Image (tube, rainbow, N blue to C red; front, side):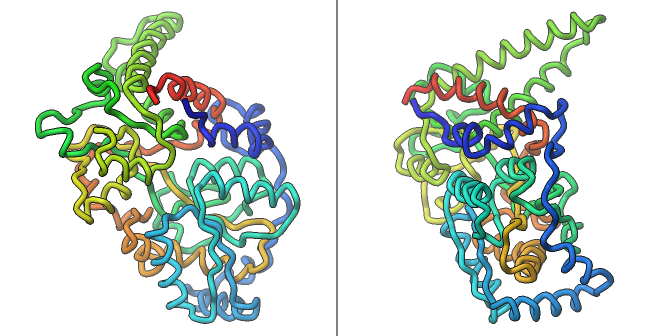
Length: 391
């Protein structure tokens, strides 16, 4: 049994956010504390009315005056981050990127510690959307900012008060083709609950947001097939019956599974044949190993695949304001960070730069706002599944 590190962080390093969420109305994601004054408001106002080219030129000139340095905290993988840094520095050679690359949990811990101490560290953070929304609730980590002219190319659902999605993460069910032959692969999440998969599955112990989104989707699908009861009490009974079925299904999947920390590790061990089927793999990790000849696949799709936004935000105690805004803009540009992310093997968030491998899948967006607003419920529910796992 392994305890989810993200759950621990939600209860400790993100305690302030959790307190704020406890007072939020159902479905709300509005911060419950007033944020500090914005450190970039003057600079942002000075850019109003400028053309895109004039804005870029002004920010680059100011960035050079700031010393030509960007402090970036990110959970981008080691295969993707170098491409992003290389392309940014090629576009703006006077700027050096100092990148702290770590797991999303470690990025969260470091930023939380710096915020609590009032210490400067990152200018920009780029990590998982769930953590970014926790930071938005905390209200003193990320600066409220929606001013990039390139954000309009990002879907509305991926734009928030303090951050914008620059990439997406696709959760897929994948399998080792040496261990799972044609015609034997899982066809649905329900099929993974079958005892024939006992000890052959693996899941990641921090994927409470994936679980919440999938559970909510399956619940809605099941209820849509029922004739609604005539009374509110009757409808509650219908929902309770559907939820009992889902709870039983997920419990059986968990009992069939090992819990393995880290999505890159999940994919690597799947390719090595350490288990047969990955329930919560990231598509980009599977695709990267496929490109190197690994005997793994996620097609035909187990429907649906879950799409979670990953985002970029400006940090309150930043030292390099113009540099941060310049990088933020560049990360959302089709010819900038979006192109670099795609070249590195990630899925850009722009509407016009989708992953062709995922085009025919039933996609369900992970709606982070209600999930984070009810994080205690979902994380506790998923933690119960983690405890059921076989190893």
